[in-house]
Image 1 (cartoon, rainbow, N blue to C red):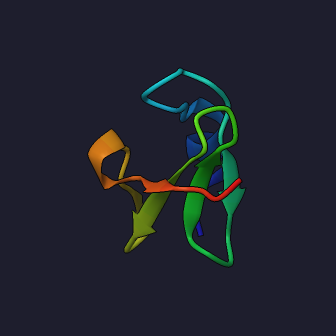
Image 2: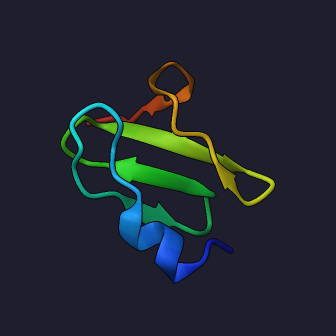
Image 3: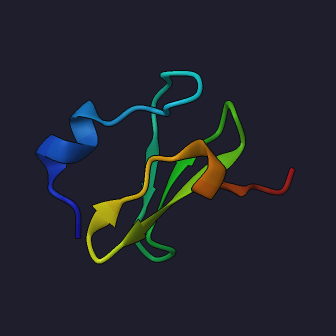
Length: 56
């Protein structure tokens, strides 16, 4: 589980927008860019090339 302090400072590297933490999927979601950044071993992978494109 990511610490609240970390979640408060992280932004989408593409648009600098707010991220939503999906604890179940272990991803950080940017609804504006429709990208999901993975979290591996409690480390957010904030690389645009590593992000999954969200449906919709």
